[in-house]
Image (cartoon, rainbow, N blue to C red; front, top):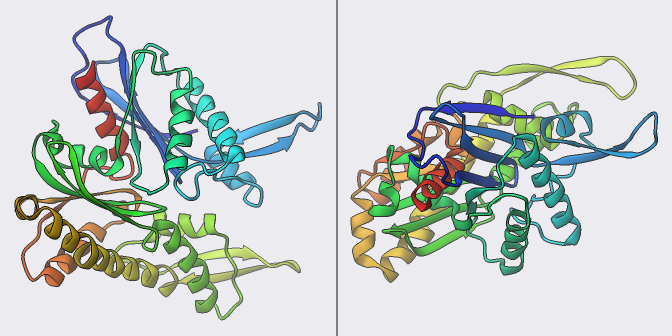
Amino acid sequence: MSDTQSTDTTDTDETNAPTPVGVKLGSTRTVLDLPDGRDGRERHSTLTCLATYEDAITGDERVVFGHDAATEYPDAVRFMLRSGLPENDESVADAKRFFDAIVDGYDVPADSAVVYAVPTIDNEAGIENLESVIEDSAIGEAAVRSFPESLCGAVPAYGDGLEAIDEVCLSVNMGSTTLEASAYRRGEQLSPFSTGSVTGNGVDRQIVAAVEEESQGRVHIDRTTAREYKETHANVGGFEPFTDVVQQPGGGSHEFTVDRGVRKPVDRYIDDAVDAVANEFLPGLANDHMKPYQLALGRPVAVTGGMACIPGLVEAFEKRLSAELDRDVEVVAPDDPATAAAEGAARIAERLV
């Protein structure tokens, strides 16, 4: 059901203390950060989706989650957080069903202190829905707290501690449904910014269109395939064309090569992200909080989120942002930007317990 990563970190000294748990219930992936039982921690990542099907023997409705749902039922799979938050009763019910299943699947203890990352989106009803999914689950008996996703993601970007909370910093979260940016002053969020016009999902849609254009209309891929192309092949500065095969509707197969179909949408994303940060977010921050703005730009800018996993993207963002601002800007990223928010949330939970 997931990809698991282990890290050696110090666990709580109190053997009877609640288990610190970090959660990122994301539009594309959900990540849990849990103790690994060996004085370390591990992160479990799975696609935030489900599909239902009829049991061939009993006729009962069955549910399949994550990668299996996306690959086996591409036409019926439901990504219930496509907009970043559960928007209606149906998506809330799907999200609860999904979250309860992965909590049970990974044996997350009820006696836990849970910190979960929340996107910076101006959608109060959606935020409340997300809170209900996690806070109504079987975990978090000791405590349940939420923190901004860009702050949680910045924590592992700055080192092994909680420097992102103890100092002044800037964080940019390159997510599937939004590009978020914010300054933080000892954990206080300053001038939060988000835009839905620069997103990982947008890149997926552009890849669908670009592959069709590059193949002169002979190849039509779905968004799941486009996302897989992006995650597997995108490499800023080191991209190599690749081939794939699709089945033709009338029979037979067609082999094709993808080049501009992935390269151009990713390159455009970097330019759009630089423009949003340099010309929308930073001017607003300088206008509202000049001194924190000056302090924060003197430190590395943390970049997290799924798009930051693309090889070479962080370096290209640093170079283009520096050029746009006409000053040297250092950009840092955690070892795994896609799971950083859950890792940071877990470290905050450790402090809570």
